[in-house]
Length: 178
Image (cartoon, rainbow, N blue to C red; front, side, top):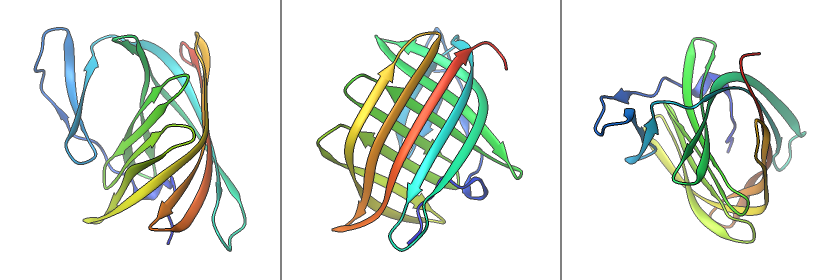
């Protein structure tokens, strides 16, 4: 089984019209979860490095650069960005915290990965009309806020009792355009 952050699997996330004053769009994420995105965020350049280790395979790294928004809402910080690779887009929203995080992606491939250190949380991976429930076992999260910030997490993805991969993700961002 292969669960990767590969660009050829993504497609554009549909955005809906406004529902509340002060917000310009509503994003439906992964199976009906909705997040209201504030009109204004701070423009940031984002770099995502993902290290993937899967049983029986050589580890590999994936590098992504994107322009996006750093958003503060109700005391929480989010990174929002869209990748466009090989003609496919994916909308990614990352909730960053000192003791937890959440990575959500939507498109032809949808993911919801709750990240709480020392805990196992239910996540989802869906592609081609098939949904695979996953367990996310998080080893660590770290958030360094600021205009040049960093959010990282180390976690295992399990399907049933089988580990399908060990992932290290690091999102770094800096204000302004690159």
